[in-house]
Image (cartoon, rainbow, N blue to C red; front, side, top):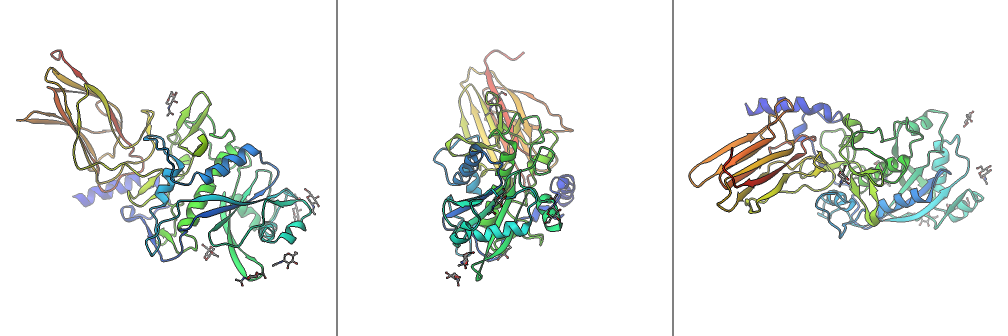
Length: 445
Ligand SMILES: *[C@@H]1O[C@H](CO)[C@@H](O)[C@H](O)[C@H]1NC(C)=O
Ligand SMILES: *[C@@H]1O[C@H](CO)[C@@H](O)[C@H](O)[C@H]1NC(C)=O
Ligand SMILES: *[C@@H]1O[C@H](CO)[C@@H](O)[C@H](O)[C@H]1NC(C)=O
Ligand SMILES: *[C@@H]1O[C@H](CO)[C@@H](O)[C@H](O)[C@H]1NC(C)=O
Ligand SMILES: *[C@@H]1O[C@H](CO)[C@@H](O)[C@H](O)[C@H]1NC(C)=O
Ligand SMILES: *[C@@H]1O[C@H](CO)[C@@H](O)[C@H](O)[C@H]1NC(C)=O
């Protein structure tokens, strides 16, 4: 019976993960013995093209340096440091986690011919940045704040402005078909290094443009959809490099070779209403995470092995003890809730969370309003509101049926308990719940 139920669930949720194998409950990443980056990382950048503004570059640099545990913890809005904490759960064979320091390294700027580039030209420039004499040979079209160094703790990352065009040929078309990638090149005639790349979308119709609207979208977090799309691709690439440096680090256990980044669907194409986002109405920006120095970003979901789901930050785990609540009114919630409208990420599996509400005896009843409910239908996940007296306990199960649920509940007396239970597999769209309660001291009508 249990088996049949979970199969039905799988079928139901499978379309959300088009790239996963059918056996979704066992999907996960496993370690293949290769390199992960446990020492402080520097990301050296080659900026291609003339389409950059300094504000856009600063947003990108700041995103990279924000990949570090931040002193500032917001219980609600994820930070890039929280996101990096998820990455840090990936360890190498000697149990060392991914580094907690990522900085911007050397930077080069290529502003030569950009209208009809070839991959070979990109590779040539990628080789040149390691050689000062060769840089000078570009006669001012290539400049660097310092020459790149061959260093195993560096990530070399090319960023292509929207002005860079690849027009002719198969290899060039691939650069336009993809939004980011990686290639290997030889330097000094005796070494190979990998370079990752990501490109700005050329216009709003470009499939690399992440901003297709949605009800929570009021504007790009850094004022330029091209930059804000690019940030997502770059962060995804950096996450892949540090967890799967040589292609035999952490990747999916189902033979498809998915990584910490590619295991998760883009939140942007998923739902008609768009991804859940925070909005700042005054500044007309939307975001799902904050970086250092007040920067806001829309960042991609990554695979969190601990909850076997895609996430932006580590999930809260309930303690085994019930939480005692004594205020006459308040708000309780499970999972992460954005603006009482939509949760940002799935709640953790296999949880049992409990709250005991104990009000002074003059309270005659407690009324509950469910503000938000996105818990898995049909699986073991449920929210229970119970009237508790020493002698009897009467419970109501709050369930979603065909998208509907009862929003209002009333419990007689001054005591109630709330219980939230989650099962083994939490679908990506199960974002949790929030309720408010208040005590009444008249006899209930
Ligand atoms: C620098 O780029 C310009 C076009 O942007 C080109 O005309 C010129 O030949 C390039 N110079 C060198 C030395 O490659
Ligand atoms: C682009 O460059 C290729 C050679 O690499 C050339 O054959 C083609 O005509 C060029 N196209 C345009 C539109 O300039
Ligand atoms: C650096 O570039 C110059 C000029 O292209 C070349 O002569 C030299 O061999 C290069 N050095 C190395 C170490 O590859
Ligand atoms: C590769 O060649 C460069 C320049 O010729 C040299 O400095 C470096 O030590 C060599 N590296 C290896 C790994 O042989
Ligand atoms: C470059 O990446 C490929 C594919 O992941 C990998 O096989 C290769 O070992 C990497 N090379 C270096 C120098 O890390
Ligand atoms: C929540 O929504 C309100 C109104 O739409 C907005 O003013 C506020 O900034 C939002 N809060 C967050 C954290 O996005």
